[in-house]
Image 1 (cartoon, helix red, strand yellow):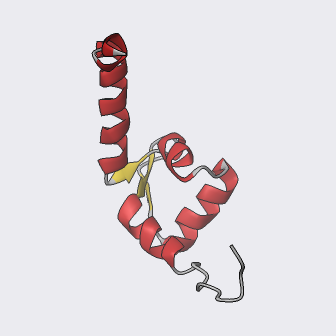
Image 2 (image 1 turned 135 degrees about the vertical axis):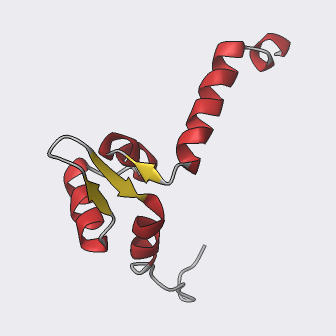
Length: 84
């Protein structure tokens, strides 16, 4: 277990993943991994939210803060009739 904790490659990979979650602007590929939704659905949501920054046909970034605020609008209220 000691070796697993001190595995430098794994620690580096975890730091890189954590850095991805802190970014303000994401590519479609990064956003697909974070939100776990398809490219098509992500594109539709980002465009509806006004979170797309298009520099040309190739370079497109998504403002994560704007998209998060937009997605929060679809939250369903808690239900008291659900048995756990």
